[in-house]
Every structure is written in structure tokens, then in C-alpha cells.
Amino acid sequence: NQVTKYNRANLSQLLAVHNYSRFDNHHYSFDYSHNTGRTWSNMLPPFWQHENHPELMSKPVARDLNNHSVAGGAGTDRTYDFASDPVVAVDSQGRAFFGCVVISLAANEGDDPTDNATGLLISTSPPSAKGSFYDNVAATSRRFVVAEDNSPTVFHDKPFITGDFYKNSPNRDNVYATWSVFRDPANCAGNPKDNPFGCSPIYGSMSTDSGQHWSTPELISGSAAFCAGMVTGTAPGPCNQDQGSDPIVLPDGRGSVVVTFNNTNTKGTFVNQQLAVRCTPSGSSPAGTGAL
Image (cartoon, rainbow, N blue to C red):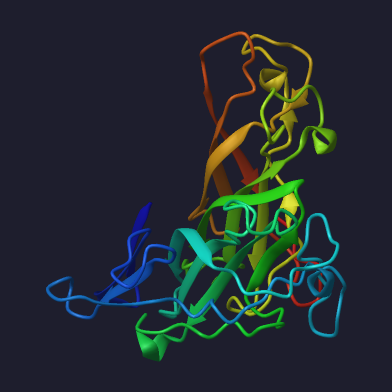
């Protein structure tokens, strides 16, 4: 997984993220260049002080009236020890945003089968930093937390992010994140395929305050006749076997966002589908009214 972006406010600035890290094999690095890619520097992200606390993230608080947990429940009180799928974006001011899914290895390696911690964190880099550092995500803070769970029924995966950098957009400098949420069969609509996680719908979230606070994650992949279990189906069915969502802001002067993703709700065939949903973002993320 590798993503590279450039800063439209300063074309000599390039940003890159990737799963490889020269520091260790459980994390990854972010890279930055201030001379159009002639030389690069890299660092580790500031995510490793943050603890898993979905019980703190699922209740509205002053200045953040959102729910940042899909399943809720108690957390592990432990920091995350693995990260994957890094992503990066830049807004019109040159502010950078850097995110990833964070995971606990305890359950996967057999150390603690009750530890199912997983989440999506996205931190910010001020314009003056030019992507050379990102704000720290504190142990129990809600800042920069998009989603967080500790449940065998939820696994956050494969995010992508983008910023609205269009000067004529009513949503200028909003930031959008989309990702897959793997759910167990009991929490899936329709007839999920027979696999450990029954379905993987696409969720979305937005920030209207430069990445400080994120809106309540919402399911955006929806349902349609062509997700009824067969490509030629006529009855609407859930589009919930998804991966690889990618949000793109349209230059339409309305701040619209199109999210494309791969879908496999095509049981009985070997044909997958590339689907897209058009969103019209509105509201405020700190106020709890932000919605895609």
C-alpha cells in the first residue's frame, strides 16, 4: 500500500506514505520532500500513545457530539502495536492529513483472544510544517479518532482520504475518509457470503474543522438491484461485500464527493463490480451534524 500526493498550495512539496518502514516491521513511515522529490526524509507517525477506548468514543461530549465506535463496549486500555494501509491528503491551505488503520496483534498472535482492538486514526500537519510532522494522538483523546472498536464483530480496514481543495466549493477544506468495516454474519443485511466476516460495507466520515473532529461513521454503500446476489438481479439487495473505496471531490461548485469501490455481491458468477455513490456532504463535524 503506497500513496503519494502533492501540495497544491506549494507544488515543490510532495508527501508519501507506505506500509514499509525502516524502523520496524509493525509500523510504517511517512515521507516528505520540499524540493519536488529530489531529496526525501521520513518519520514514524505519532499514533503509538493512543489507547483503545471505544467506551469513551461512543458517547457525545462537549465540542464533539459524535459516536466514533460501531459496536461500542469496553476497550483494552492498551496502546495499538500494529498499523497498516496508510493514507495521506492535502487541503487548499497546504495542511496535510495522515491516517491509517491501527490494530492489536494480541488476538492474532494468541496472546489475548479477548483483544480485538481496531480503529482508524487521522492526524494533521499544519501548513507551516509542510508534512514534516503530524500532531500527536493522545492516549484517551477523541481528537483525530475517526473510528475505534474492540469487538470480534468489527474490523476496520482499507481507508482512503481526500481533501476538498476547490476554491469555489462550499465545503472547501473539508476532509473525507471512507473505508471497509468487516462485520460478522449476525450483523449483516441479506445473505452474506460464507466467510469469517459476513460482510464488509463501506463507511464514510468527514471533518469540517481541519481534521480535529470527525463525524459519526455512516454506511454509504447502500443497496441496489445489481447487488441482489446476481449481476442480473432485479430485487434491491445490500451492496455489502466491498473493498477499496476511494473518495474524490468533484469540481462542480457544490462540494459533491463521489466514492468508488469494488463490490462482489454477485453470488453465482465470477464477475465483480466497480460501483460508485455520489454524496452531498453537509453539516458540522464538531456539532454532530456532519453527514455524507
